[in-house]
Length: 397
Image (cartoon, rainbow, N blue to C red; front, side, top):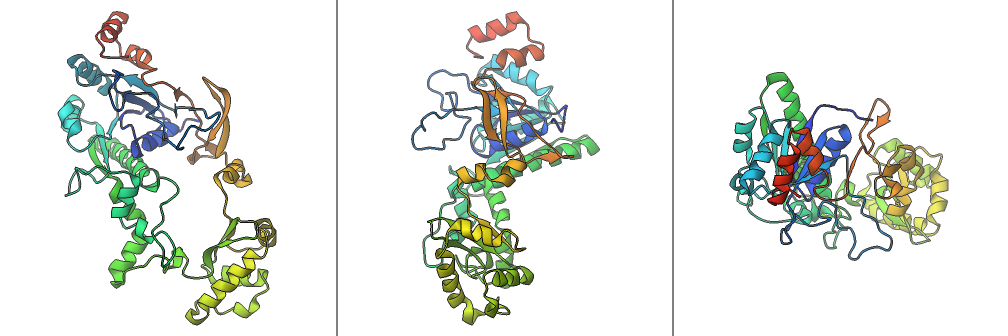
């Protein structure tokens, strides 16, 4: 299913939030053209595989790199005059441009916002960076963990009395920065539909992570009381909002914030004596210890059966392998079997984007940087002779 047709994103963001933004827009139906560096043996970004996250400390046996879905790739030397001429022709058919350079680099390359706006006045242009285009940190390097740290997110992860915990996945790059970039671009395009004006989008991963943390930030700003790790409603202070070990070394989660869900929890475990004690500070630690002992006394599957028909907020803590095979995940199409140009039928993660009961599907794959160069240039009116000369001069791969 293709939800949005007729929009094109020219993408110069190779790592972190940029690729996730491009994935979302590609899933929606944008024609995403990713510009890779021409491979010359020394480029940091021109090599194979840099558009795919490095998930493992060493290659997993039998692991396959599926590449990037719903996008095409052109390898182009932006530092050459001929390469810049190609870029200008691409921009003429483009609705949005995304770049993930450090602040100032795109301008030096001649592909910054002002330069691109001169090429196409109604362009939507997004600069995606760790700290944004302004402020004292704008030129600092960093990664997901650093941005979450500055935003006050990391400090709140973990148990009271312990050290801050590293999230198990890239919250800043994907849930914060990538989705922020997609929202920026979609909002700017929607405004352009109304006004005819393009826009410049200054996307900061740290800004987005700070806003994700707004539940705690706003609480502090309103009260002046600083939240502490493991001592807030959502970080394990109360026994009815916590994670518990089970007999088989697995875990379950309980999150009964509303009183009727708390009451249902108490009745399901035959602890009617705790009714009316949900917010008791005097009883809190004792109840938490009793819950620990109780959940540890049986297997996770036992507790899943106990709570199967109970209307309360309980769930098993799935591993990634378990999540992939969870019936809810499968029923929602979040794991899909699709046709891949290299590997045939493969399993891959689905899309969260669902409109009118249909989900986005993979339409194309990038398996090699620059694999669509010929196709894209031909679409933009380049003759065979022009393409051959560009390739012979090292402007394209």
